[in-house]
Length: 269
Image (cartoon, rainbow, N blue to C red; front, side, top):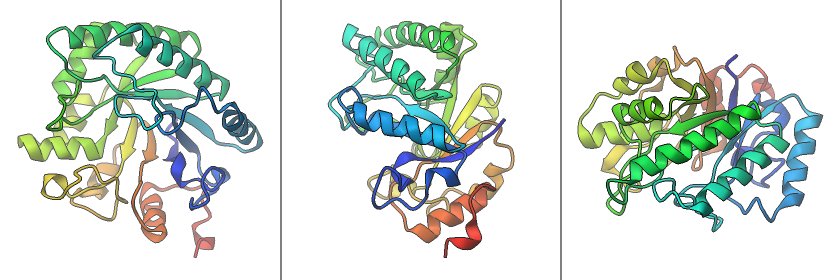
């Protein structure tokens, strides 16, 4: 069943400048890329208790190649360190009762990188499956400093085919897809059409494409160049509003667009 939620930076229970209480949403995505989850057992315990007290679910965003917490995971490198951090990520996600984990495929360091990423994903997906957690591979976009693994629909489908595990799905980040579609002049709808049968999770946010830096602004749905109303009609997986820069009114309006029934919108303003 599809659930609607937000990234954890919007939650008052975790951040003083948050705008929602955890009990007002159906899903909260905790980013293990934002803090050193191995050292913050107190915060993990707070999250666990909050999840027990209120009726909402967690998903987890795994550490990645540009994590802010020092725990940088790059599956394109595929070293023991990367797999150990991902093993801890899965275990901590399980302790929170998380339903799913979103992760990046890593960076391209040469012809062996994709195979290393596939090998890692196979191990991680198996671990998640054993614990009843779905794994979702997120589409990225290439920047001048790094070529990302899993930018185009064909790339993602190839990886899923090679991993060959029913527990590995796609997390479609619409903001990232829009940047790639502008940069390489491909239709944004290609991502939805080609990945429809494999997408279990969505990250929704807006931006102005490659005409305004930084490209990946993570704006509310109401601000930017992505025309969201036609997109929102057929989303079948869990939905996370992943806004990192925007006013309260625009964020609430974005949640209205998503149809979040749990939020008492009439009481917000």
